[in-house]
Image (cartoon, rainbow, N blue to C red; front, side, top):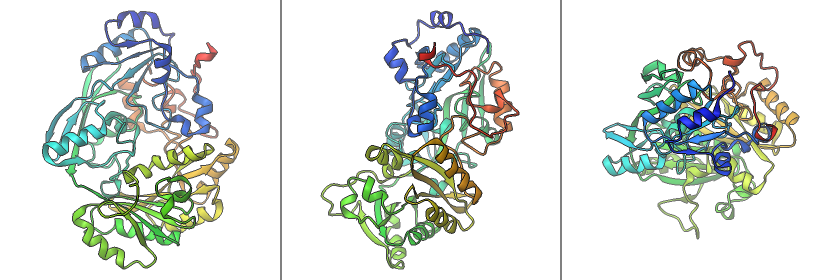
Length: 469
């Protein structure tokens, strides 16, 4: 990239909501990358030069046009709840902070339209009030995350047990995207082309409007179920997910030791050797659930949100699953980190048991149940007691040797966090939408180094630490 003219860009944009205060610029240059000690080491100290908070699409276009002319990198940010450094500016420049573009523009039967800065919880609230509808799926950071950040940085979450992942056909209807060119273009993206910009970290266009489907809203019943046999807990959650007549939104399985050690409000009600399953079931499906549950000896319901005698309710049960599990563990033990593991849909339980046999208690199994192309799959957000980077890499390699696919959360690039290969559609669209490579530079290896062999962690050569200037 050509050396940026930061001063000229800031002068041209001074009439917008621009922030140059060091403390707030630093805060807005961070996300939850510190979940990973590897990323904390690599990304600590990286900051933008300034932050612009646009309120309209026209202001987004103005920022992109100006930064293009002055060769200033632009990194898009929502609420900063991502875990992989997606919103960290590797080369400085401008943070495009989209939280003020938060309008929920339309709600119709089965769909809504919103700006990218709208919070997931606010979309749910508006849709429930308007027509008793809710989001099909959301991240466990529902209370603080934006819909744009979820689309650009997420892959699925609460609700994926029924609806699959964000990239599954039908889970996004339309995206409106602004390109970063001399004169930015507005592109309406639908169908197969959605893969070009969903889960692309804002590397190939700025999302300014989102249209997504809705589902009927329910006052979901939250449950905790305990088992003495971890494999039985896995089977129970998998079978329940496959019961087409029982509507579920979450099934999460925790290896013994997780709930007793890391879940403060749950710990008084479990033993150290209890495996725990967290569930969300639609109220009209509770009769079917009770029939299902009665057929499973060794399964004990210790909590249900519609009928319990706990002195203190545990709160939203989805805030124990997905990446909130890691967050709760980190609050107790700062050495904890995690891995993202795909155990697949083809008889995954023996593989999970094998990994548990190999690594527990150094690696504790936390399993999320999801639907994939009509089949039930099991994925791990395993808790890892971190010692050093070499051992973490060894754990990753051993998983892969045994057939467990790792989506590495200790890498900041799209490819290394995925299947370690170029996504041709994303790369081709970046060439079109970002010809100078100024959008979130360093996050797409294929743009910088098409021949990269993934033998070691990618190190973006343009990395610019503030304390190194």
